[in-house]
Length: 82
Image 1: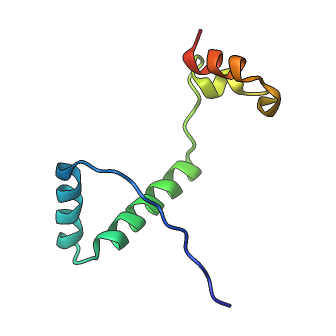
Image 2: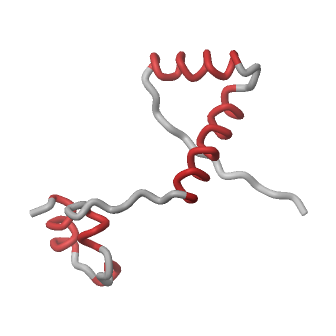
């Protein structure tokens, strides 16, 4: 069975791209492989140890609410913290 891969695009400053490219070269890895491995490693860490929601954060304000049923005005109010 063949697998397909999704593409992920991101914008970087020239300085950030140079820094990441240098790190990939130091590991003797292609840039895309270096970025993929670093992102997956970080994802595994976050999944294993999820961050706690801060009491006033958007996720805390939305927790337990039927967000799919919120109107646009209420969502905007919640995201702006008003």
